Amino acid sequence: DGHVLVSEAAVKKKNAKVAAGLSITVRFVSSKPLRAEPDASILLDVLYEDEDILIINKPAGLVVHPCPGHWSGTLVNALVHHCAPSELFLQRPTSPSVDQSEEEEDVSDDIEVADDSATASRVLDALRPGIVHRLDKDTSGCIVTAKTVRAQRRLLQLFQSRQVQKSYLAVVVGSTQTAGQDVVIDAPIGRDPNNRQLMRVTDSEDEGGRAALSVYRRIAQNEAMQLSVVNVRIATGRTHQIRVHMRHIGSPVLGDTLYGLAGPNKKYSNLAPRQLLHAYRLRFAHPVHEDVLIDIVAPPPADMLHAISRVDPSLAHLLSKP
Image 1 (cartoon, rainbow, N blue to C red):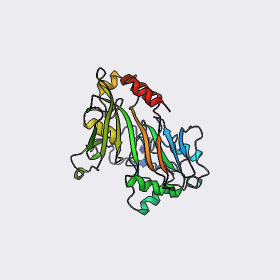
Image 2 (cartoon, rainbow, N blue to C red; image 1 turned 180 degrees about the vertical axis):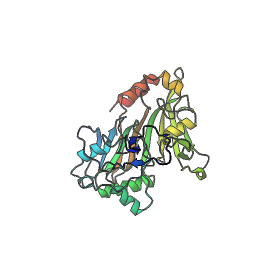
Image 3 (cartoon, rainbow, N blue to C red; image 1 turned 90 degrees about the horizontal axis):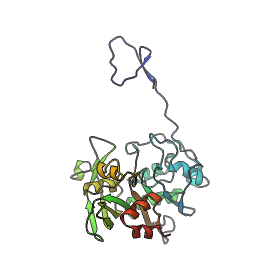
Image 4 (cartoon, rainbow, N blue to C red; image 1 turned 45 degrees about the vertical axis):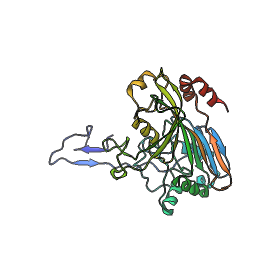
């Protein structure tokens, strides 16, 4: 971009050679202000809202919060506009620094908090006001956000202590296990040492993986198409957890360009223009009014219902009901 010069000439190749006597000039460009700005153009599908929390049905394609490559047009930008009167969104100090190690593009880890100081830094993060968990960019469905400091602190604790029940729907390749039976996948997940944008199952947590537990149940199958619909419950929230676990057992999510199979993805490209994964249900105690149980279902979007209807029309009809 013309920010590195050799003898006053812009360097165009990363492997350009230099020699003794040449002058090298590097121009440091200041980063964009790390503050999420309001965006009224992003419409929110609100499933539940009160003075403390907001639950929306996130569409596929929407990044949760600003990160490298996606500094605007995110869910947080929409929240800053929608929740402007709320205390978390009134004053947004510029973040001095942001850990971008897990924010390459798609993010899905629950934000795990080690101590009160870490909790405070999350609550005051100007790029992620109200955010307590995440969904991949191309995953649709339920996501809960906080509108007050008190609610955000408590929600972070609920996710960390695994008191939030999370259920997903996925269209996967293959027949998986017997219908109606719960199958546990208990396999640590860590970052792929050869490609930091990918995650992988590790042999043990000693290899850099973190404990990851998924439980899936096949709820529909089409043997002719070699596709199934599964319900997946996750006790942990590792990056790309369901996608990695389903690939690990040989039944990757259809349409998944990172962990899927090229053959089925190409064959069903019209049916699966994105990874067919949907965060279907969230269930947890209200972070402020603990005697109130929040149990929210996010109706699957049209592309998900269309794919499910090809596997099992009756299931698609059932899921399409309010």
